[in-house]
Image (cartoon, rainbow, N blue to C red; front, side, top):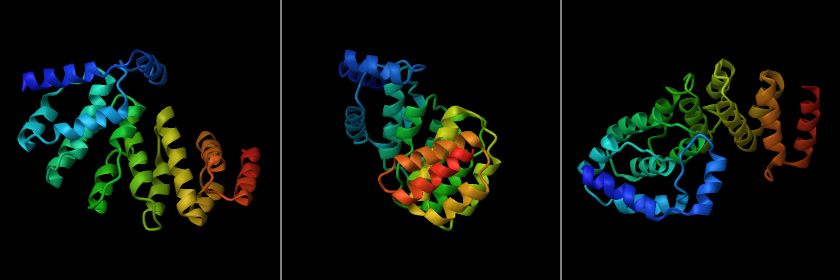
Length: 230
Protein backbone atom coordinates (compact mmCIF):
# COMPACT_ATOMS: atom_id res chain seq x y z
CA UNK A 1 0.00 0.00 0.00
CA UNK A 2 2.89 2.35 0.74
CA UNK A 3 4.19 1.75 -2.79
CA UNK A 4 0.78 2.58 -4.22
CA UNK A 5 0.57 5.78 -2.19
CA UNK A 6 4.03 6.81 -3.37
CA UNK A 7 3.07 6.02 -6.96
CA UNK A 8 0.02 8.30 -6.69
CA UNK A 9 2.11 11.14 -5.29
CA UNK A 10 4.71 10.71 -8.04
CA UNK A 11 2.02 10.70 -10.74
CA UNK A 12 0.40 13.86 -9.43
CA UNK A 13 3.74 15.66 -9.34
CA UNK A 14 4.35 14.88 -13.02
CA UNK A 15 1.27 16.95 -13.96
CA UNK A 16 2.38 20.01 -11.99
CA UNK A 17 2.44 23.31 -13.93
CA UNK A 18 4.52 26.16 -12.55
CA UNK A 19 2.25 29.00 -13.68
CA UNK A 20 -0.87 27.19 -12.51
CA UNK A 21 0.83 26.47 -9.20
CA UNK A 22 1.35 30.19 -8.65
CA UNK A 23 -2.26 30.89 -9.61
CA UNK A 24 -3.59 28.20 -7.25
CA UNK A 25 -1.35 29.36 -4.42
CA UNK A 26 -2.71 32.89 -4.70
CA UNK A 27 -6.29 31.61 -4.81
CA UNK A 28 -5.81 29.29 -1.82
CA UNK A 29 -3.06 31.00 0.19
CA UNK A 30 -3.10 28.64 3.19
CA UNK A 31 -2.64 25.52 1.06
CA UNK A 32 0.50 23.93 -0.38
CA UNK A 33 -0.30 23.61 -4.08
CA UNK A 34 1.35 21.53 -6.79
CA UNK A 35 -0.36 23.23 -9.69
CA UNK A 36 -2.31 20.25 -11.10
CA UNK A 37 -5.55 21.18 -12.85
CA UNK A 38 -8.81 19.81 -11.48
CA UNK A 39 -9.91 17.97 -14.67
CA UNK A 40 -6.63 16.05 -14.60
CA UNK A 41 -7.19 15.11 -10.94
CA UNK A 42 -10.68 13.89 -11.80
CA UNK A 43 -9.40 11.83 -14.75
CA UNK A 44 -6.68 10.25 -12.61
CA UNK A 45 -9.25 9.43 -9.92
CA UNK A 46 -11.50 7.73 -12.49
CA UNK A 47 -8.59 5.54 -13.49
CA UNK A 48 -7.68 4.81 -9.89
CA UNK A 49 -11.16 3.59 -8.92
CA UNK A 50 -10.77 0.76 -11.43
CA UNK A 51 -8.76 -0.93 -8.65
CA UNK A 52 -10.53 -3.31 -6.27
CA UNK A 53 -12.74 -1.77 -3.59
CA UNK A 54 -10.49 -3.27 -0.91
CA UNK A 55 -7.48 -1.48 -2.35
CA UNK A 56 -9.38 1.77 -2.67
CA UNK A 57 -10.62 1.56 0.91
CA UNK A 58 -7.12 0.88 2.24
CA UNK A 59 -5.84 3.82 0.21
CA UNK A 60 -8.56 6.12 1.58
CA UNK A 61 -7.67 5.16 5.16
CA UNK A 62 -3.89 5.34 4.81
CA UNK A 63 -3.20 8.13 2.34
CA UNK A 64 -2.10 11.32 4.08
CA UNK A 65 -2.23 14.25 1.66
CA UNK A 66 0.62 16.72 1.94
CA UNK A 67 -0.47 18.94 -0.95
CA UNK A 68 -3.81 20.48 -1.86
CA UNK A 69 -4.21 18.44 -5.04
CA UNK A 70 -3.55 15.20 -3.19
CA UNK A 71 -6.52 15.95 -0.92
CA UNK A 72 -8.74 16.84 -3.88
CA UNK A 73 -7.71 13.59 -5.59
CA UNK A 74 -8.58 11.57 -2.47
CA UNK A 75 -11.99 13.25 -2.32
CA UNK A 76 -12.66 12.41 -5.96
CA UNK A 77 -11.69 8.78 -5.32
CA UNK A 78 -14.11 8.48 -2.39
CA UNK A 79 -16.94 10.00 -4.41
CA UNK A 80 -16.30 7.94 -7.55
CA UNK A 81 -15.70 4.53 -5.97
CA UNK A 82 -18.70 2.16 -6.05
CA UNK A 83 -18.81 1.51 -2.32
CA UNK A 84 -21.98 0.37 -0.59
CA UNK A 85 -23.75 3.34 0.91
CA UNK A 86 -22.79 2.82 4.56
CA UNK A 87 -19.10 2.52 3.72
CA UNK A 88 -19.25 5.59 1.46
CA UNK A 89 -20.87 7.59 4.25
CA UNK A 90 -18.20 6.50 6.73
CA UNK A 91 -15.37 7.40 4.37
CA UNK A 92 -17.08 10.67 3.51
CA UNK A 93 -17.41 11.63 7.17
CA UNK A 94 -13.74 10.86 7.73
CA UNK A 95 -12.83 13.01 4.75
CA UNK A 96 -15.08 15.95 5.70
CA UNK A 97 -13.43 16.05 9.13
CA UNK A 98 -10.09 16.56 7.36
CA UNK A 99 -11.05 19.34 4.92
CA UNK A 100 -8.67 22.27 5.27
CA UNK A 101 -9.85 24.83 2.69
CA UNK A 102 -12.86 25.96 0.67
CA UNK A 103 -11.63 24.47 -2.62
CA UNK A 104 -11.30 20.93 -1.24
CA UNK A 105 -14.73 21.36 0.33
CA UNK A 106 -16.43 22.49 -2.87
CA UNK A 107 -14.79 19.76 -4.97
CA UNK A 108 -15.94 17.10 -2.50
CA UNK A 109 -19.50 18.45 -2.21
CA UNK A 110 -20.99 16.83 -5.30
CA UNK A 111 -24.46 16.11 -6.62
CA UNK A 112 -25.90 12.84 -5.35
CA UNK A 113 -28.00 10.60 -7.57
CA UNK A 114 -30.03 8.63 -5.03
CA UNK A 115 -30.74 8.16 -1.31
CA UNK A 116 -31.39 11.87 -0.95
CA UNK A 117 -32.92 11.70 2.55
CA UNK A 118 -30.02 9.63 3.84
CA UNK A 119 -27.52 12.07 2.37
CA UNK A 120 -29.40 15.05 3.77
CA UNK A 121 -29.39 13.49 7.24
CA UNK A 122 -25.68 12.79 6.84
CA UNK A 123 -24.91 16.38 5.86
CA UNK A 124 -27.01 17.88 8.66
CA UNK A 125 -24.59 16.58 11.28
CA UNK A 126 -22.14 19.23 10.06
CA UNK A 127 -24.58 22.15 9.90
CA UNK A 128 -23.70 23.64 13.27
CA UNK A 129 -20.10 22.50 13.39
CA UNK A 130 -17.61 24.96 14.85
CA UNK A 131 -15.16 23.85 12.17
CA UNK A 132 -15.37 26.20 9.21
CA UNK A 133 -15.19 23.72 6.36
CA UNK A 134 -17.38 21.08 7.96
CA UNK A 135 -20.14 23.65 8.20
CA UNK A 136 -19.44 24.93 4.68
CA UNK A 137 -19.74 21.36 3.36
CA UNK A 138 -23.31 21.18 4.67
CA UNK A 139 -24.36 24.40 2.95
CA UNK A 140 -22.69 23.58 -0.36
CA UNK A 141 -24.20 20.09 -0.38
CA UNK A 142 -27.60 21.57 0.40
CA UNK A 143 -27.50 24.05 -2.47
CA UNK A 144 -26.40 21.35 -4.92
CA UNK A 145 -28.88 18.66 -3.86
CA UNK A 146 -31.67 19.49 -1.46
CA UNK A 147 -33.42 22.76 -2.36
CA UNK A 148 -37.18 22.18 -2.42
CA UNK A 149 -40.29 23.38 -0.57
CA UNK A 150 -40.16 20.46 1.83
CA UNK A 151 -36.59 21.10 2.95
CA UNK A 152 -36.45 24.90 3.03
CA UNK A 153 -38.24 25.61 6.35
CA UNK A 154 -35.74 23.52 8.30
CA UNK A 155 -32.87 24.94 6.23
CA UNK A 156 -33.91 28.49 7.08
CA UNK A 157 -34.13 27.54 10.77
CA UNK A 158 -30.61 26.13 10.52
CA UNK A 159 -29.33 29.42 9.12
CA UNK A 160 -30.99 31.36 11.93
CA UNK A 161 -29.35 29.06 14.48
CA UNK A 162 -25.93 29.35 12.84
CA UNK A 163 -23.30 30.51 15.31
CA UNK A 164 -20.32 29.99 13.03
CA UNK A 165 -18.85 33.39 12.21
CA UNK A 166 -16.26 32.02 9.78
CA UNK A 167 -16.06 33.83 6.45
CA UNK A 168 -16.36 30.76 4.22
CA UNK A 169 -19.40 29.54 6.11
CA UNK A 170 -21.20 32.86 5.66
CA UNK A 171 -20.28 32.98 1.99
CA UNK A 172 -21.65 29.46 1.51
CA UNK A 173 -24.91 30.48 3.17
CA UNK A 174 -25.19 33.46 0.83
CA UNK A 175 -24.50 31.24 -2.19
CA UNK A 176 -27.10 28.76 -0.98
CA UNK A 177 -29.70 31.48 -0.46
CA UNK A 178 -29.10 32.74 -3.99
CA UNK A 179 -29.85 29.26 -5.33
CA UNK A 180 -32.88 29.01 -3.04
CA UNK A 181 -34.21 32.30 -4.42
CA UNK A 182 -33.80 31.08 -7.99
CA UNK A 183 -35.54 27.75 -7.35
CA UNK A 184 -38.06 28.71 -4.64
CA UNK A 185 -38.46 32.45 -5.04
CA UNK A 186 -41.43 33.17 -2.78
CA UNK A 187 -40.31 31.16 0.25
CA UNK A 188 -36.80 32.60 0.04
CA UNK A 189 -37.99 36.17 -0.51
CA UNK A 190 -40.10 35.91 2.63
CA UNK A 191 -37.10 34.62 4.60
CA UNK A 192 -34.80 37.36 3.34
CA UNK A 193 -37.24 40.17 4.05
CA UNK A 194 -38.79 39.05 7.33
CA UNK A 195 -36.39 36.73 9.17
CA UNK A 196 -32.76 36.98 8.14
CA UNK A 197 -31.16 39.64 10.35
CA UNK A 198 -27.45 38.97 9.85
CA UNK A 199 -26.25 41.99 7.78
CA UNK A 200 -23.23 40.38 6.09
CA UNK A 201 -25.11 37.26 4.95
CA UNK A 202 -28.12 39.31 3.83
CA UNK A 203 -26.00 41.73 1.79
CA UNK A 204 -23.98 38.95 0.18
CA UNK A 205 -27.12 36.95 -0.60
CA UNK A 206 -28.69 39.93 -2.34
CA UNK A 207 -25.45 40.63 -4.18
CA UNK A 208 -25.28 37.08 -5.51
CA UNK A 209 -28.97 37.08 -6.46
CA UNK A 210 -28.53 40.34 -8.35
CA UNK A 211 -25.52 38.94 -10.20
CA UNK A 212 -27.55 35.99 -11.48
CA UNK A 213 -28.95 35.89 -15.02
CA UNK A 214 -31.76 33.67 -13.72
CA UNK A 215 -33.42 36.44 -11.69
CA UNK A 216 -35.80 39.06 -13.12
CA UNK A 217 -34.83 42.73 -13.25
CA UNK A 218 -37.91 43.52 -11.16
CA UNK A 219 -36.73 41.26 -8.34
CA UNK A 220 -33.22 42.66 -8.57
CA UNK A 221 -34.45 46.23 -8.21
CA UNK A 222 -36.60 45.31 -5.22
CA UNK A 223 -33.74 43.50 -3.48
CA UNK A 224 -31.32 46.33 -4.19
CA UNK A 225 -33.77 48.61 -2.42
CA UNK A 226 -33.78 46.24 0.56
CA UNK A 227 -29.98 46.18 0.58
CA UNK A 228 -29.83 49.97 0.89
CA UNK A 229 -31.87 49.73 4.09
CA UNK A 230 -29.46 47.31 5.78
